Length: 116
Image 1 (cartoon, rainbow, N blue to C red):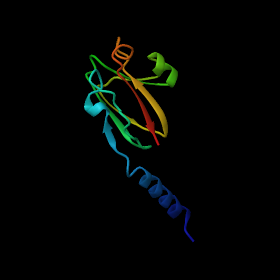
Image 2: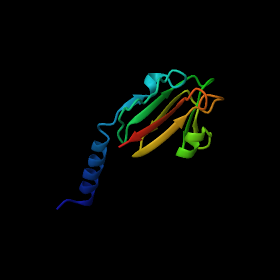
Image 3: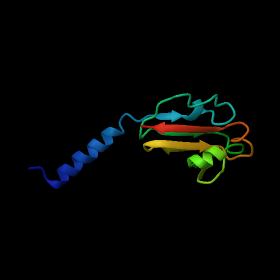
Image 4: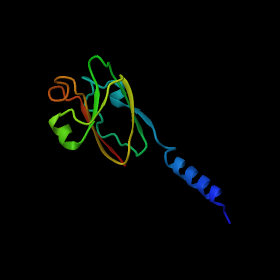
């Protein structure tokens, strides 16, 4: 019979193996801002993948928002503003945009990411 500690260890190893195939993806090739060129352009993401946002914090930020706030470019949610931020994707759809003036509405500095 397996002891409780051994079962717990096997469960932890199995859980970690699920994230073994996770990747770190530089958002828009490291160009979060005006030159995103439609990113993510159909790119596929997995649960556990890490998005890496690189940007000049004097001119950009990253808001993690819900669908309604994404559609209306309303900065209400979680704001990231270090200039170098990481987001681990859970399963589902994630919405991001820049809350700096005109960046979302006029320049469309925004991204919808689906992790499966």
